[in-house]
Image 1 (cartoon, one colour):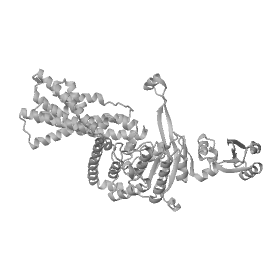
Image 2: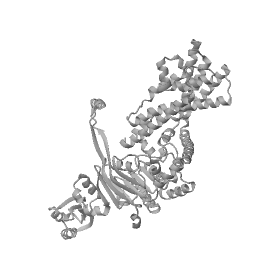
Image 3: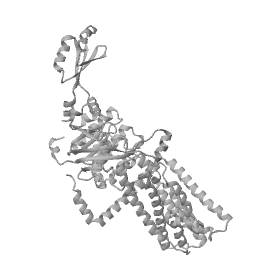
Image 4: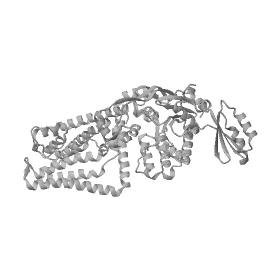
Length: 345
Length: 286
C-alpha cells in the first residue's frame, strides 16, 4: 500500500450518517406474545448515530465493535441496502440507496454468514452467471479466474456443488465471486468467521494481494482482531452506534496498551522464595505452571527495564519473555467504556 | 474519482429509447441464463424432478376428472355443453401454468427473502430486484399444465368443429399471455404485503383457491361473485371472455376488451407496489 495513493479523493465519504429503527418491546411467554399482537410499546433505537468518516482509495480499514454495535447496519447503508435516517453517504461517487443499480456494479460485498453463490450447482456455474450479471468480458473473466486460482487455490472444487464445500472453500469462492467484476471497493462482513487457521491465513493473503495488485479498497468488519492486525493499518471502533475511535492501529496500541506482562521460567524450585518478592503493589504475580510465572504491570507506573533487572538479580531465570497486552483486552476495555477518556486523542 | 455518475445520468435521459431497448435485451439474455441455471439445479436432483412432474400431472388429471364426472350427471352447465366446458377448462390451464412456472418464489418470498434475509443479496446485484425474485426459481414441471390445457382445447375444438387459423392462434397466445399476466400480478400484489408484515405463510393460499372459480362459466355465479371474479380478483375475466370468443360465441355484457386493460393495470399496480415495498424494506430493514 503506497502512501501516495492515500492522498486521492475519498472513495467513501460519510457525514453524520444515522439510522434509527422503531422496534417494540417483546413480552415473554405465550401470553406475552398474544399481548404483543395487540399492544406494542414502540421505542426508537439509534443503531447508527451520527457517524462520519472518509476512506481513501487503496486503504484497508477494519471496522470493529461488539455485537449489535451498528457495524452491519453501517455496512448495509454503505452498500445501498438500507436508507439512512439522516446524514449523507457518497461511495464511489454514488449515493448508494438512490442509484442502487449503477452503484452496486462498482462494489463487491461478502457476508461471511451467507453465501451469494447458487447453492445446488457447481461453483463455476455461479461464476458464469455472475459474469453475465456484471457484464464482464470473456477475456477479463478468464484472466481473473486464473489469478484467483493462483492465490486462492479454488480450481480443485470449481465443479463441486456449493452445498458440498467446506466453509473455508465456500468463503474463498464467495470472495472470488465478489471480485469477478473487479470493483474498486470491497465490503467484507466477518470474512473469517468460523474458519480454521489455514483458511483464515489464505484469505488474508488473498486480500493483501488484491489490495496490492488491483488497489482494491477494503472495509471489513470482524471479531477476529488478528484480521485487523494482519490487514489493516487503520481501525474504526463503533459501539452503541457511535464511532469511538478512528485512526491508526499503532496509535491505539501506543495510547492504550498500558499493561505489559513479563513471563519467566525459573531454573529450579529453590528459586521460588525469590519470586515471592514480587507480590507487591502495582505488580500482579501469577503462577503459570510449576516453574513459570507471569507478572502484569502498568508500563506507565513501572519501568520495564527496572523490573527485568530486579527479576534477574533476585532469581535465577532460565527464560524470559516480555509481552504486550493482547489487543483484545484493549478493545474489551474500550467497549466497557473504561478507556473512553483515553481515546480522546 | 473513478466514475462520473452525473454525466452518465444526463446521457441516460437523452438516449432513453436506446437504453430501454438495451436493458430489455439484456434482461432477455439474463432470463435465459437464469432459466438454464435453474434447469441445471433441477437436474442435480433428477429423481425429485420426475416425481414432482408426475404428482403435478396427477393433480391436473384429478381436477379434470371432476369435470368429467360432473357432466355425466348433468347435460349442460348454464347452457355450456361438456366439450365447451372442457375448452374453457383447457384455456384456464394456460395462465395457471404460466403462473406456476414463474411464480414459485412468490409463495416463499416472505419467509425466504424477507425473514431469512435473502433480499439483501438481491439488492446487491445490478439488475431489477423483481426480475431476480421471479426468475431465481421456476416450477418447470408445470409445463404439463399448459400441455394439458392445449390438449383439452384441441379435443374440444375437434368435437365442436372450431377451426383454427393463424389469426385465431395468435389471439389465443395474446389472451393467454394477458390471463397469465393477471394471475402473476395478483399473486405479486399479495407478495408485496410481505414487505410490511413479517409473515411466514403469506396470504396466497385463500386466493389460490379462487383459481378454481375461473375454470367454469362465469354465468353460473351470482352477480356479486361475478363482479368479484371480473374486477377484484379477475381470474374469471381472464379465462371466461377469451374462451367465449375463441369458441365463436357472443355474450352480454361483453368484457373481452377489458382483459388486456385489466392485465396491464394489475401489472403496473403490482410493479408499483413492489418498488414501494422495496423502498419500505430499505428504510426499515428486516
